[in-house]
Amino acid sequence: MKIAIQQEDFSLEQECRELRAEHKDIGALVTFTGLVREMETSEDKNKLSSLFLEHYPGMTEKRLEDIAQEADQRWSLLDICIIHRIGALKPADQIVLVAVSSMHRQDAFNACAFIMDFLKTSAPFWKKTSTADSQYWVEARESDAKAVEDWAETSDKR
Image (tube, rainbow, N blue to C red; front, side):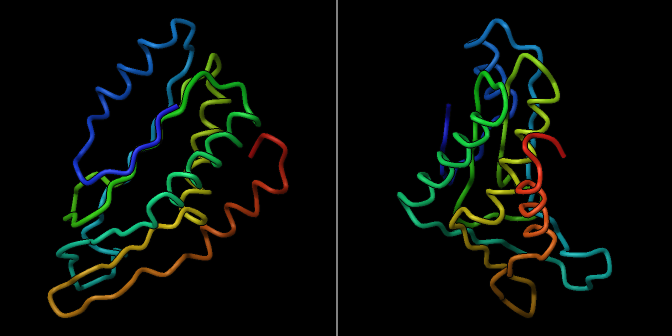
């Protein structure tokens, strides 16, 4: 398992190569890469100029480990990689990588979605957006909370 909080960018290709090298019985490798959007919605007139991410050192890593361990208990997984960037980012930059390997695709798909849903709602990260004329802290979305609620209603499937 790899959990990393870092300012520097990551290589999806390198992380996948490492996961594959560690387990010869991989049947599925599912990844999610989150990117900085230029606009919050398609109707937005204000383009984002930067996104600044902060975290709670120590607590953030522990929460990500807990999320990964819960996913590992729910599904039959081989390995998990979670990398989340902090600091100043600009549109199109990579923010987060979740990579899950398993012998079977459905376990990997479910675990990847589960990890991302819980990361969005319970890991202590804060995002501050800047546009040409404003700055504001990003609020949690109801849709993210709903996604987590849906997991509570299922034992392992969506």
